[in-house]
Amino acid sequence: MIDTFFRKKNTFISESNFGKFIYDIDVYRSLPKKEFFDKKLAIEALSFIFKTAKSIDIKIFLIFGTCLGAVRNKDFIDHDTDIDLGSYRKDKEKIIILIKDLIDKYDFKISKISFIEESITLIYHNIIIDIGLFHQKKNYYIYNNFYQNRMPKIHFDSLQKINFLGISCFIPFNVEGYLAYQYGKNWKTPVKEWDYFNKYISKELLVLLREMKLKIRLFIKKILNMRYFILVKLGLLHYNILKKLDIKNIRNIQKSGQGFCDTFIIKANRNIVLKVNNQSRFEYFKNDFKKVEPIYQFLEYKDRFLYEKKIFEKLNRLEVTVIDNSIIFPYIDSKSLDSYIDSELFWDFLKKAISLLKDNKISHGDFHIENILISKKSNKIILIDFEMIFSDYLSKKEQFYYDIYYLFAKLEYKYPKFFDDNFDKFKKFIIEIFSNSDIEQILKVADKTKKYFFSINGARVELFR
Image 1 (cartoon, helix red, strand yellow):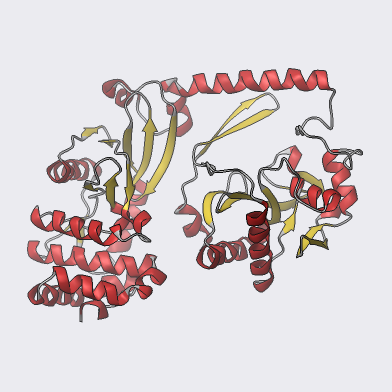
Image 2: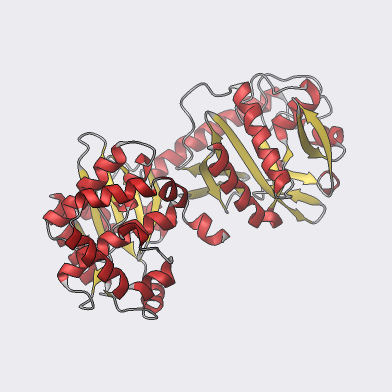
């Protein structure tokens, strides 16, 4: 459960080592643009978190500046920018349940989940909540293997409770000792410009360190503009691809989708989406799919990329390049249809996407709302990811009906609450855009492929009856 949950989230972190310094360039953490810290919302967020944690019997505790404010100020620190919490790495299974409940019940959102950092970042409205997952290492509890996150085990072997702004919260045991270790013996005296290093060194050395850190940042930025950095760090991109496409001045690289390919969004002088064949994942899927109906055929990557190029260009009128074991798409400033679920626009965009597929007589194979993009500029529908190629098991006509059934089956599987809440609306939508003959054909295809659907997600057919 954990692997699946984390794998679906977008986290890509590259590390650079400079002596004792480690800098993480986290290309996915985008912070809210509104006012950083609304105390009322922060109290709500904490209340929901500790209430949910108690219901599933998981220990969440205040750490860092949030703990300091709770003990010293009996409030949040005035210049704080986020909520700092801790939990235990051994409780990852319960952490997943906690996050799911917070999302479903209280509208929390995920900004980042990282195994590398052993940390989670959630957002509640404009409040940022960082959760570090601690584990024991000799006489310390630590997360992210970073010395500033290393605490004597006495403070985390057991916890104590505090009433903070009306919320019953856990804090480290012997909290005054913890705060003295974290912030120095003068922790009771407020410091407006706290720096991780200021408990160890003089102001003169602190200024020098800040200058060094700035130089390191500039150096990293320079490295990001160098093509060999990508080759070394990712081990996936070929110099020829960069050279042939004239990709330079790279600002960042984001790892995106998971299918037969590893997908990267490269923002540079020429923004592109790059998909690189992942043969081991391809072999896994191919072997797994053989256990059910032979709905798909599995072409090797070169033929698969050429097929995808042909379909993508025909449907979207956009040029695609195939080089070596990679396929390169133009970057489209867009949102996927799943981001419109709470909008009335969802239904209009869904109808247009179905019409686009039908009018062009295209078989998709993986037709679901994450593969339907909406251009931010023009609201144009762009369909992506044509990796799943149908076999002769389904006729050309049946393939379209399969795509439609797959679309709604995947909706039910991935967005059960949305699906159930709008079940009647979906039935009405289907009746409006499909004839009785179409619905009859969809049901026949559903019956023909039921072994596949049952093994994948057990989708219902009541929607079409």
